[in-house]
Image (cartoon, helix red, strand yellow):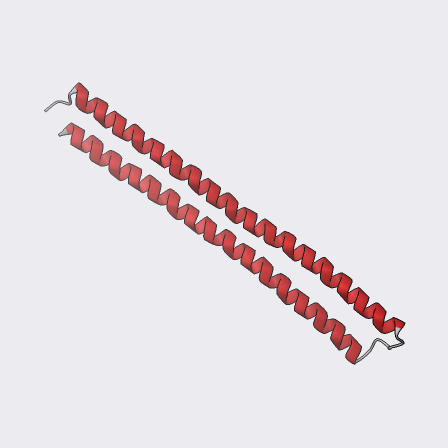
Amino acid sequence: MGVTTTTAILATTAVAGGALQVKSAMTEANALEKQGELAAYEAGQEAARLRESARQFQATQKMKYVMSGVIISDTPIQVLDDTKAKADEQIDSILKRGEAKKKLASDKTKTSRREALAGFVTDTTKTVGGALK
């Protein structure tokens, strides 16, 4: 049986509508990906601020020791090292959190893109197949 003009128009319209849905899903996926990148960037900025703050605090700590006549060895060195270690742990945690958010957004983006394309192919196949019957 041949394809009527009306059937062809309806099928073409359905395919075009599906293409618009894919485009919309891709735009949304791109926005999600950008949010993940922004989260990682912001984490890097936060870590840099904390790193600088910790460096300044450690310098102040060291200066107070020196100004009060404490020789920087043994316990004072341990205190300075502990201060740096705690700051490093916080910085590492901030960076890992940012990367985890970026990876989650990336994974969601990939899934969203795959699902949009798979849905389009499935719907298009059904539409064209139905029009040809």
